[in-house]
Length: 128
Image 1 (cartoon, rainbow, N blue to C red):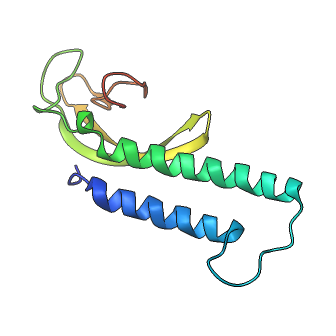
Image 2 (cartoon, rainbow, N blue to C red; image 1 turned 90 degrees about the horizontal axis):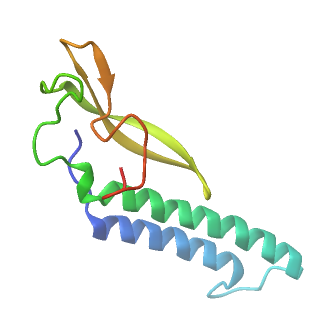
């Protein structure tokens, strides 16, 4: 599984993306783009959704509940999972699709493969 991500670094990345989007509407220098209010509203809505997805993805990445305190076990037989590794996945949310990495492993005796965080992604104690 990958090393924990620093919250500060993710905040900086989100802030940089936000400032780039803000420059589209309120540039520090130069002329303002000749938009109608409707055009501005459409662009702002799309950019707000992008920013919200960025924040949600970053929040999932730094969630302490993602790193189990002990080696995850098979829910069927209780044996330790083998081959635990992160795998890219996605979820459709009210904000649109989000991307994140999720730990997956398998139980050799049962032959089951799954994520220690559950068979489905749910918002609960922690995010995943």
